[in-house]
Length: 290
Image 1 (tube, helix red, strand yellow):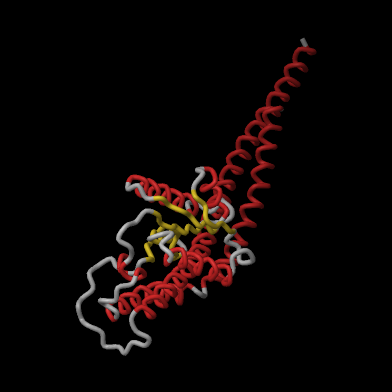
Image 2 (image 1 turned 30 degrees about the vertical axis):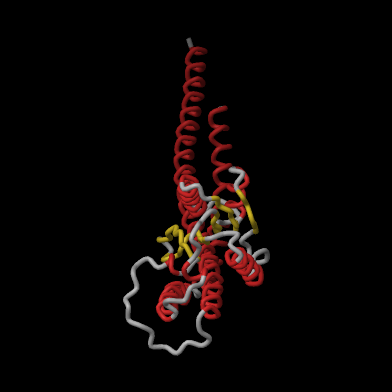
């Protein structure tokens, strides 16, 4: 009988867990549905900013500016990482942390220091456990990290870059492609010329530039950093809710399978106990007859 009671407690525990996973799945589904309306525009925005950056570089070719050409010596870089505030969202957090560890290891081999701005509690926890150089940290929730906070962070990082306190700036986070596909991407955003992945064709510039030279380089690089931070923030939120929705759906289905399995075992155990009791009753009755 104790075995039957233990199975009953397991079933009850799984049923309670199933209620939680269903609720979390529903909440993430609602949040994802709200954000999903932005997905088409976000994907266009994410790619077009890179194309515009290449056009700007082509048009101000020859301008000597740190934001375009960078610094001759790199001793310290800045990394912005986007994670979630909570877990239970599949590999959303672990993939970013794994890529961050790989990046940190590579920079350490080169003798380059890394300071980190972490948006999301999971990334902040990772930085504190590893005792890393944490420059800024914030929750990723809208109330904690809104458009104003993002703009302030962008301005601070840009000023540190222009004052040569850091010589390169990177962003790391998950990019949302579909409900079933999110990929972790590390992108260098400053200086601009180092962020171009292929050689630009020498086509000249067919646009009139106003203002010209250093002023345009500074404005363009500052906006590029801000827009990329905004893009990664929204992509991270989409990826988080998509990953949590999938993870909680899988957890709900798995708990359902376990409940059915334990209920079958419990029914078999209960039937066996009843059968044993009937045998004992019949055996006792036969013994009285003898």
